[in-house]
Image (tube, rainbow, N blue to C red; front, top):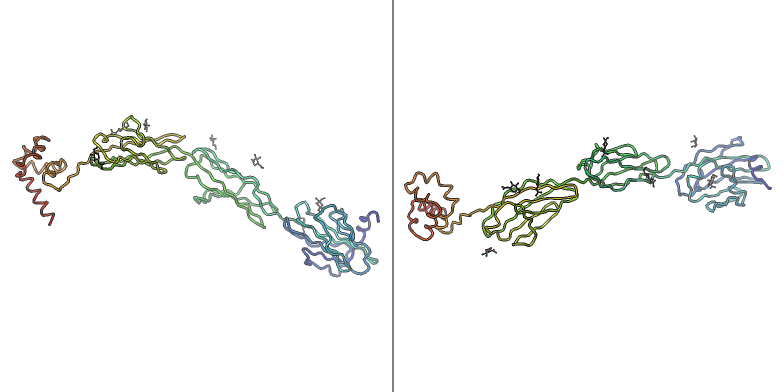
Length: 375
Ligand SMILES: *[C@@H]1O[C@H](CO)[C@@H](O)[C@H](O)[C@H]1NC(C)=O
Ligand SMILES: *[C@@H]1O[C@H](CO)[C@@H](O)[C@H](O)[C@H]1NC(C)=O
Ligand SMILES: *[C@@H]1O[C@H](CO)[C@@H](O)[C@H](O)[C@H]1NC(C)=O
Ligand SMILES: *[C@@H]1O[C@H](CO)[C@@H](O)[C@H](O)[C@H]1NC(C)=O
Ligand SMILES: *[C@@H]1O[C@H](CO)[C@@H](O)[C@H](O)[C@H]1NC(C)=O
Ligand SMILES: *[C@@H]1O[C@H](CO)[C@@H](O)[C@H](O)[C@H]1NC(C)=O
Ligand SMILES: *[C@@H]1O[C@H](CO)[C@@H](O)[C@H](O)[C@H]1NC(C)=O
């Protein structure tokens, strides 16, 4: 028997094919010599069992892949190590193909020759492949205003459907049912994590891409800060920027450095804090915070001004407090002692050393009020 194909093509009897050892269909009593079985669908990587029933008086039997013989009886013709014989008996002839791949797709034929009637049965093998994303855009860092294109290519059988969406922050308005997601003139609000999903009947593959959008700093307006002499004072500057801003502090046009003159500069993410541990007269003034990143800079100014606290522990301190004088200046216009009070700081300072102003009716009024408040 030099060429089994010759007899294989001529023969055939009742055959059944089974996949993975289970009968998919029994041949029945068909009189047809050439039988086409239902397609068998199998996943890539699995083991395929091809089984065909035999019967009495079998003289020759073979399994073929298209027109090449895999096994003729117990003789292996295939050189493929994945192909092996499982059973060859009076009842069945089963071979297996391990680690099935897409190239194994196609027509397989079992040919059986008996003394009475030759017959062939063929089966079409379909190999399915779970989706796999094979080419995905890398994580991207772009400047605001750039045109961004995200790409996601996937393999699989059947051909997977590809969907892009913005995952976090979740934004359903930003999605695409194709391999490409175009984001023209990207804004900072479109920075985030994008997800590509490739799905077919068998499985789903998902990958994500992180998109960073750089933009120049903007700083919130500085709020002037009032601090009493000798107290702790803090100027706080906040910048919105990607990448995060670096900060510089200026007193007028002079740069301020950390650790000098009882001053500390500390950065905490988007914030920078300028702390005076003990505010002195010379510290009052105009400060500028400059936030810088590679795309630009922004600045804002703060005035550190003096608050003179009306410490009310003694009557004399109350009297010397300019803020109290201001508050009551309109009332004072009605009093006959108005001129004494409006002589300026000198007159007030006099009150510190002397006792005459204790009898000032205005001060008396304050003293009475304070006594009332204490009870
Ligand atoms: C079997 O698969 C082939 C190839 O995919 C197809 O042409 C044929 O229609 C299928 N037959 C059945 C019965 O599904
Ligand atoms: C079946 O034939 C095809 C085409 O020649 C080949 O690529 C594949 O490896 C064969 N499979 C087996 C299991 O022999
Ligand atoms: C991925 O896709 C890009 C754009 O089409 C292409 O330039 C690149 O060669 C692809 N890489 C691979 C590994 O297929
Ligand atoms: C972005 O795309 C628009 C057209 O969609 C084009 O006019 C513009 O020049 C592109 N910008 C850049 C930076 O490539
Ligand atoms: C603040 O500085 C003044 C003058 O230098 C000093 O007299 C005072 O003790 C300081 N206060 C504190 C809390 O360090
Ligand atoms: C503080 O300094 C900045 C920058 O030098 C200037 O624009 C701003 O007007 C100053 N503010 C005050 C209150 O002087
Ligand atoms: C602060 O910003 C203004 C424009 O907003 C700019 O003219 C000025 O030079 C900046 N100052 C510093 C110290 O960067």
